[in-house]
Image 1 (cartoon, rainbow, N blue to C red):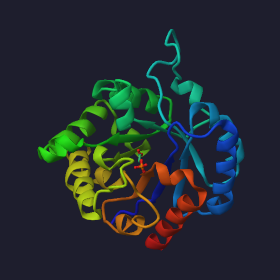
Image 2 (image 1 turned 180 degrees about the horizontal axis):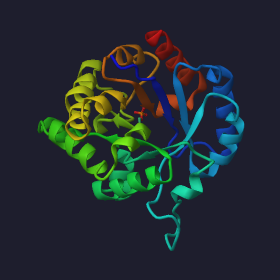
Image 3 (image 1 turned 90 degrees about the vertical axis):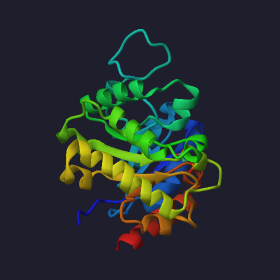
Length: 257
Ligand code: PGA
């Protein structure tokens, strides 16, 4: 079996002022900054990247952005480019369902952003996942497979070392209704990894980390992390509380010990 290092990534969404983000980052650093066996990533808003980066400097915790534009620079008011994130973020979340729903991030745009981020050596957390209606219509496999393949069009084999995929069923995000561990495992294995295998072959498909996201918390994380094809979580609400986030990191460390 391939050993994939587990990842607990906190998506802070549009929460926390820079001062509050600094405080949260400090509390997280004190709680889990020494942990080496779980890759911890926190993703604050753009305006807090610099202070969070500084607060976490010298710890094991990595920083991610929540979005990126595909161009290097230009007349794109309000946007932030990959070169601007260099030195402030190791990771960038791309294709989150909230971006797809509210900000017009289509599969094609997601693909452009993925290619741009990888070109500038940012690591990508690519989000995919079906809505409730798609789930009920039994379109999950087809849709998620399409999202993965489209987002990765043109991504070279060697670049896949810098890609993490987060399966986040839209109906589970922020609803308190997580997918069951078995449901999540099935999609992560039979759809996400299966699709990767078709494109990149066994070795790469087995090496890519696949996260689950959607209402994860300290109570359900152990069962999720025990699944063979789930290598971590993308955590929204629970990542805003240092104690909850730390509990999830510690649980993951013990599941993998
Ligand atoms: P949640 O969010 O943990 O609050 O459900 C997950 C996400 O949107 O990444």
